Structures are given as C-alpha cells and as structure tokens.
Length: 188
Image (cartoon, rainbow, N blue to C red; front, side, top):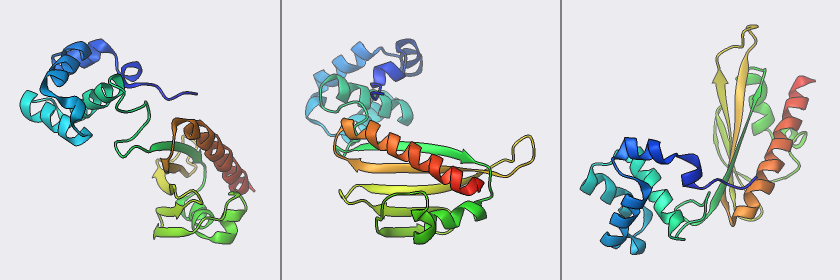
C-alpha cells in the first residue's frame, strides 16, 4: 500500500474551513513569499506567525506544500528519511508483555533479528539500532480492559530513518508479521 499524500488525507473543504484558504491559495502565497527555498520549520512558522494558522494546520499545509512542489515525497519526514509505524493489541498485562520486549532471549522467540538495544525506559519502551542504522522503538501502552474484563495492551513499533518510500511497505509487513508472532507467543 502506497503512502497517501497530504491532499489525499485531508479534504479541500476541511482545509479551507480550518485555515480560511484553499490549497491553491496557500501554495500561491507560499510561492510568492519564496518558501520553495525554506526549510519545513520556517514554512510552518511563517504560516502561524504571518497568517495565524493553528500549529497543527500549519504543519499540514507545510507538508502539503512540500509534497506539491517536489520538496518532499508522501511519507517523508523533514529530515529526509521515512518512517513505518505498526501497532498490535494483545490481551495481556503490561507486566506479561514487557519481558518479551526487553529480554534478548525472550525477544528471539518472536523477532528474527538481533539488533543492539540503545535505550530502555522500563517498563514502557525499548529502542534499537538496526543493521542499516535505522532506528526502532518498541513501546507498550496499557489500554482499558475489554468488555470481558480482560487486560489488554497496545504494542507499537516506530521504525525510523528508512531510506526511501519502498522500504516503508516492506518494513510495515515485517513488523505486522513480527507482532503476530509476539501475539502467538503470548497466547501460549
């Protein structure tokens, strides 16, 4: 599945209602101001400072502008890299899932890589450096119990510093499969 562009994610009517202008109007103003030569932060600050655009919408207009002018591909972050994020809800307590993220031996039962840990925030997150120098964050968020009263958590993965958009789909599949394997291990 290809990453959707900003204009595919945010409808024109919604943008105009929130910001007072259409994409065409914003992009013309930005071109006139010389924004093609600005970085992401400067564009967003200009929208907020000069035109009183709310911070969230300023970021969105900025991303849309950068994509429309070929300054950024859909899914590309301001630093030029890409990111893949995946989550999986599992019916266990945080204490039950945590060792399977933090302990090297238990992690090998479901994750077929051996990357060095570069940081741990116990019992919430583990950070890794992959072989290609990309970065991975595995995080646990406790969720309210299900209707049946069972405990549940969301295990999330943010894999950053991917080199191109083609890596995003491949990486998402890898993590979906890996989190399914984790769920199977936890179900035993």
